[in-house]
Length: 494
Image 1 (cartoon, rainbow, N blue to C red):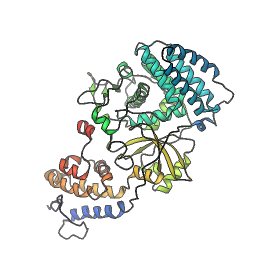
Image 2: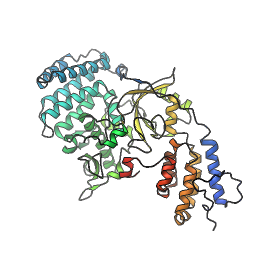
Image 3: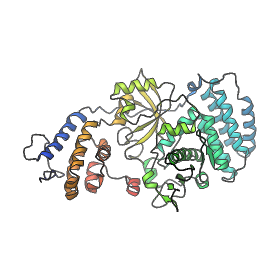
Image 4: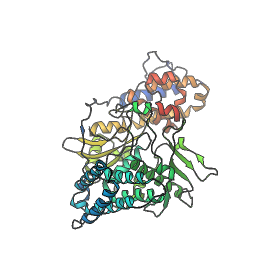
């Protein structure tokens, strides 16, 4: 049998790929025909990169509450009670008391009269946290977390994921605090006081005491180089709640009776092998098994996780991580963004190797293929989208809908990826016999794409082919392609 990879071009050689190359076997011709199709269809639609986005800082979502709130309800009573409690706890720290008052005022401004019910209920939850004892955290931490809740309720889309892999959880936190601040406050308060919360399905989900009490470790030099910023304890607890809700639903689906007898998300002290301090353990095994490497970041349906934490029943699809939800082209994508008015903020999954996300402070950061951002709104008149990136702080930025579409789909043509992956899948036995030649073939294919698209192309090929392809590339080839592992990837793997 003729080896379909015997004519592989090595790095540095020049050769044009055409389906009419008579020196190639039939299988290799298919491969090169697919590559030619990739060149013609997938790469011809490159758009000019726009200038770097400007930075604003608003975060006002009062319009979300106009159609459902009772405008006759006032939060005056709960406000007074909360202020009395805050004055007691911050009597020796006037600066923190002033900041607390500022956040309350900003929260009320964001919600407007239409959000008075949510403001009233949020204040009741925060007062309960301030004035109730907890065996999990010290009093100073409990008071600090209460301040974190009010601050996040006021500036609802500015959550930070810190050094964690919880970008989706951070975006879901933004959505919860924007649209359901009282429910978000209750989730955190219940968890801090009791170590557990009850989701909308009635499941009682526990969060480990260490996860609640342990603060994030100091940022490493490598994390600082990436541009990461520390996250607050309140943000960390809410993101842990979201991650454990993900697994509570998953454990139930898998037939486990109790929500806490399967996968659990926990935060502990960072280790050499796990510098973020995030762990996922399978408690259905005895003893529990650490499965952190295969569960980095959320993998469940974000909409389902959100529904498990919020009683809102009028939510629509808000995740744009696949072609069905983005639409087949930019025009359809813009129409979808416009139709989502009143449903913002949205969780949007982008390719972190595509601009402007690839050159956000640092490089690719903690993710190699998927990264979630929070989209706050879309202006159809200007075609501009407002968003925040929890991986690198929380400044509001703008991006054109065209450029965001690129950042989500990266101009990858699904049919081309499928054609190339099919060749690899059909010749797996031959690939295993000649791994070094496969590495060269893979290098040549990836080298045809833009640098920012290569890693996503590799991952797409792996998914469609059902094969692990990355290990065929040498480290030298990875460096030349611009897809060498980041600091975190070198530890955990991709």
